[in-house]
Image 1 (cartoon, one colour):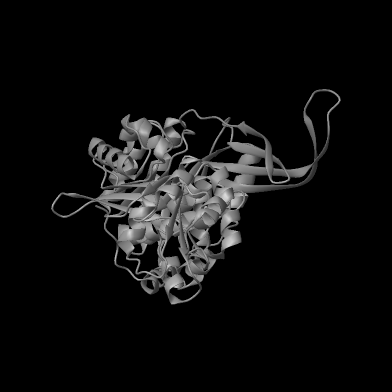
Image 2 (cartoon, rainbow, N blue to C red; image 1 turned 135 degrees about the vertical axis):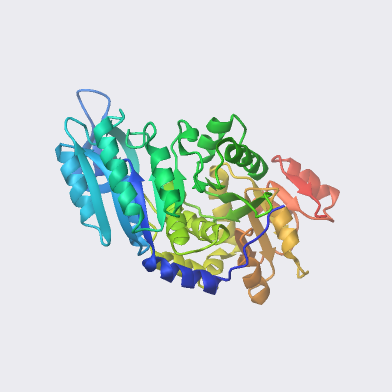
Length: 455
């Protein structure tokens, strides 16, 4: 059964303000994220392709460099060790990294190597094309030895080591094992952000943060819901002796598996705030940065996971790769701020649900009708759907308290009364009710819906 961290929003806010006291060492694959924006008004006469009239270009640190960018946005101090090529992209990346506040960059240059650069062409907010220029072969052995030495020396001045592996050669071979050994010998905790490949290279790390697809690939197990993610995380932890496993499940939230003092495993699920817009770009890097900053300042894993879930919701509402800033976390932790966005009129609720349905999400409807609604009821209802709407009679403290619950995604004012008209307007996939009559049950079946009785 999931358990919950007891830290209050005020305590978490104080922890976020303390990120400025943290110092993190990041080692991994740096790259340039280049964006070319423009407009498309015609098709080329030479081939059936759109012509992009370029209006502006933006270059940002990508890969492990985006983890660094997120850490600086949170206020943490960062030492960054990576490798670039002796090309213009490498020179540009060095300037981008060095220009950030509170960053000590160690970007080693390998002659003849191509610096990874991903170029995205966009028009009207839509991606037209992405081109990649990269060299993913392992870095030269002598350069690897130098990188390990520099990172091992830098460990003493930081409290957390992040290994950000984008499989571009910086963390190839035995480099991760050597870095983990150095960090643990110095009493530092190690956080791993893997992108596929052999997870055994990171054996013994304190925390690994795989995406669901990576978790499935590493274990050969399904990861289609919270229970299966937890089961696969347990297998992965035991396979490589990881201290804990954190799985971002964008856009829903995160699953944390950690080991208690008696050797037992504890599973916690943390929900991200639901959003109509979901741009997954950069979400994983934001989670890694929040976790690393939190660990560096002494937070428990449960507390950093709660903050990471908040960060995941924030970054999902942004377009493109954008960092999560400390002030955004503080705003999200302010009582009532997040809840206020969930309180909507019935017509607006219908519009939001329609957009959610276009994303393939399963919608649940729970009508309170002035009755007491214990947390166990909304938690059970949320397990039956992807997004939960609670209908209430009007505004007030009861509606506010419902909106503050993380398992509740939307509170519709004026949707407390049942009936055919309401169901046809909202068309829920699941109606949570203990007293639905045969006519309403038959109506739900018209669009494949069902009635579920709370227990």
